[in-house]
Image (cartoon, rainbow over the protein chains, first blue to last red):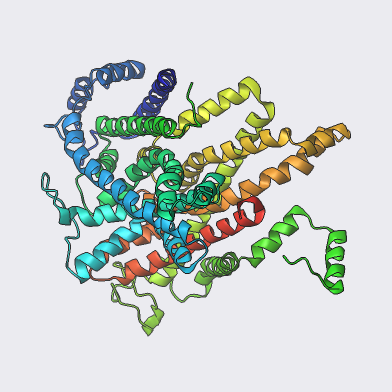
Length: 309
Length: 300
């Protein structure tokens, strides 16, 4: 187990390096610069800015400098917001994104799992078909459609909830409800389909038949024997689920005007605020790799058939 | 199935057995028995036909601006049946163009991913050994990339170029395809019928075309039908963020983002494009599911 973890971490290092390198060189080789403003800067000021941020050095030295900075958690200053460091920008956006993401993940699990189990128990009946139809809708309708429609219905027509905007530091239940629901819908759909298909398979398997044959009440058969096996695929899905939530948060934060990292990323990319863009990519890539590893390890702990050497 | 058969049925069964059905004919029969898939094919066919030919017969053009008819609700007057947008352009014809664009992106980008994925996966699977390991390790590393962020960076730094959208999205989607094709190729190479063909002296070119390709094709076709909606989603996601196709051209995501901005005063701008997009994605997913059930009978 430990050896497996170490090996996975060893693979993660080159992966991260590739990610950093691709993002770094892609942005630096592109036309345009963060100092392109409405009025052209005089050459002297421009040269001074370039040397202040180290952009006049050869590219590979800049890259090495960046890696050195990363190793000491120094992400550098933002090129657009002169009074903020990248760490501050990320630090203010991350709690918002993480709150939404975690809440959406919890909601998706607590709604999706019972839906899937229920559909599996009532296999090929009307409830099963309707749950699967709803799940299909959840997969087909993207958050960029559900987000605006939800905020149109609940925010504009019914006036129950605020449609957009979130003051920093004031994350209330009302302001977060619609974004979280929007973000979780697709995951609810995927999780319920996943749980249904694995539960259907488990309920047909020999050990469940044995449990029933020895006269266990149905509730115990499900709780003690079927549930654990049926939920296993869900564990390995949690890694990709987090990646999906991270991607989805970009749209949700744009729709609901939330000051999270996803929204930061898009605006920073448009303004060519290189350090911020790089930091977001590095942070999210690292998170995805880490979460995938954790999901795989958890799977190994829960499934005695899987052994990591 | 009942065990008792009338002589007539027996004769039919025998006839069927004698005639024999190919893998593909079997799959087609199963597919056409799936009502959701058939319905989706009809709807999608109609939508595609409308998107391609509709604009030729519609009295309005996608970039004509009617200054006196800004944000008009759906009306029969002047045939603005889906209303007009904030610039005073006819929404119905723009929707057709948007659908055309989204479908085109879906097909072309999926084509790109198919090309890269099949070549990469088949090569890795067929050669095997070291080469296979290195090629698949590259895929593993790429899998960990938060790709949507790279696509966003690409679109921002290199401008909103239509061809770039196709290539960028296609380059994102090929990874899973490569894995599927590789896995299939490897498992097929060890199958008895391939060994039998080898023992019977069939040339390896024939084995590839007669046995490997048709068997790899099934999962690939299924995956293609499920990739198209994913690609359409990615494109609309980019357009929604203002990074996709550029005005006055449009796509479904672009129309939805305009609709989302104007929804409080002009809900039709959101409702029609959103509905069109949902229907399109529904159709592709139903067809994909139907194809999977038809081609891979184990799963039923």
